Length: 409
Image 1 (spheres, rainbow, N blue to C red):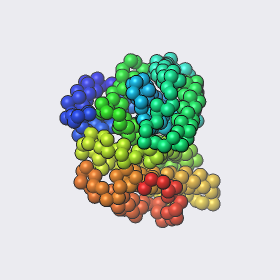
Image 2 (cartoon, one colour):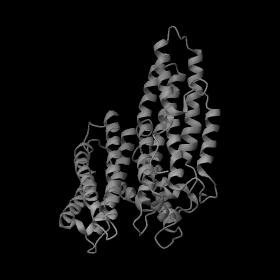
Image 3 (cartoon, rainbow, N blue to C red):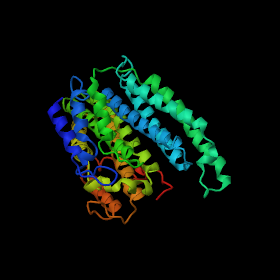
Image 4 (cartoon, rainbow, N blue to C red):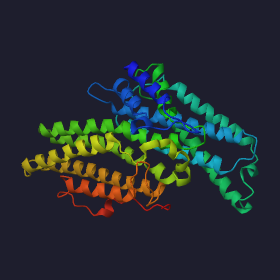
């Protein structure tokens, strides 16, 4: 790793302007610690021929683990503060934790499917132990609490049972998931030094605030797609190279593996859609600086506009030049893979459309000055579909790609 570049970036982030609660981002890359993440991918997460999918998945899992530790510490501070806490100040982080553990379980499933069950990881024990120790401290403190202390005077007594039941249920889910988290996700090894976990903490802490906000989780659920996008991009280009060389079945298989990773990019949006309420978002919106409304170059440019367009163009060329009678199986395999990948691209775009609508509202201006974000995203989506080489091949009903309606619009 180019330590000089890493140290330089860390110092630059430390010099960012501050407001009352924390640093203010200057660019999208700074906000998401993307310089550090890319350097870690080049050094720690690379395979022989490019970015290693399993190593990147474990890295995403480690990011989630540290996020969960911070949320548990937040609950612990609330429970041990002495004053009567609001129920929402405990159940809110608990719901976030259960959602992040669900995402972590999904990541584990894909890692196992990609061959991540051969070796043991000793280096990860420290992080897992910290997670379990913090969770144990929360459970001990939780048992000391008189549940009526968690209810403010403004909440009617009749709601107490439901609220407490929801809290207990979330902790049951957390407990069960942490057990799976501990015993099934320590099984893939790659050599890392002490800096690896130090950099993970910097990736999470670089923009943290002194107030209790969900900015860390907001960033985490952008960091995971950014890290996976590098692997997806590599996989798409590998598939294209195989198809161009006439290895059609191998090309389809390579694209199938990429879709497993793209599914995780899509799923990572769900906690933001469900849990990032406007009231929570506005607590840290000022710390986003001029990055609110800006675009990810890795996802928007490299993956969608370059890799996807390359795949789509190659698919059309290959299919148009194949002898459909003698290569029927190959055509079917590649067509299925191309359709599946295209479906995921459009599903991701449709889900992403819900973020500004749910969090900002329809008429809110972004911090970069863009007005009516949903309309802007719709226009970008329509332009993308017009330019998509596969639109004439796969004319889908828009309802196929529409996510289920949310309760919070």
